[in-house]
Amino acid sequence: MHDQESHATSYTTLAAGPEFRHEIEVKRSRFITVLRRSDSEESARDLVAGLRREFHDARHHCSAFVLGPDRDIQRSNDDGEPSGTAGLPMLEALLKRETSPGAADLSDVCAVVVRYFGGILLGAGGLVRAYSESVSSALEAAPLVRRHRLRVCAASVPHTAAGRLENDLRAAGFLMAETSYGAQETVLRVAVPDEPAGISAAAERVLALTAGQALLVPGGTEWIDVPLR
Image (cartoon, rainbow, N blue to C red; front, side, top):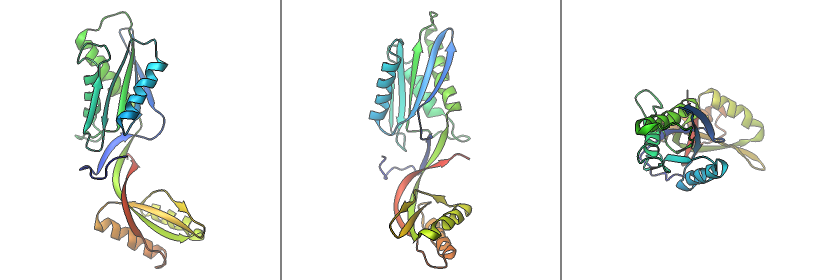
């Protein structure tokens, strides 16, 4: 989990779920790119170790990862390829990936490229292009989400009223976080921009929708995934 003191309030990452795989072939060499959402160096290194076991007969398992909302952790490894021809181009592909016009903020992503040598030497320039293209083409096809640091507010309502209130809030454009259920009440959680106006607007809407029966109580901030539009 990330420190809430990050300077960033949003960034782009892989959608939650299984790792994403994509393969290209360059002059008979196979380049298998595996992307995993990772929020720690341990998770990223676990991916590399697992792929070494899975593709134990491959010649290279090159890797790069960028972590944190501020992208302050960046690592790459050539794994036996000539220095600077694999890991660094992969890292550059992660860092330069445009997630919106003119903006590059991809983070919490580990990329591993497994290479099966095809018998034809690519040369340094060819390797740089192949490893860069392998990661870039995988990112083009991978599912991405926008991750926002939002203030999560909670409203406790009777079970019988919870479904309708949640639907009304969604219809009004509010982002709902995880709901919890108690013995007597349902606790709805609404994620809003971490600013007074956003919190106030949500609180007023809850009051209006419940005829003044439910109060929206601000809680802490959390990183919440929001689908890319």
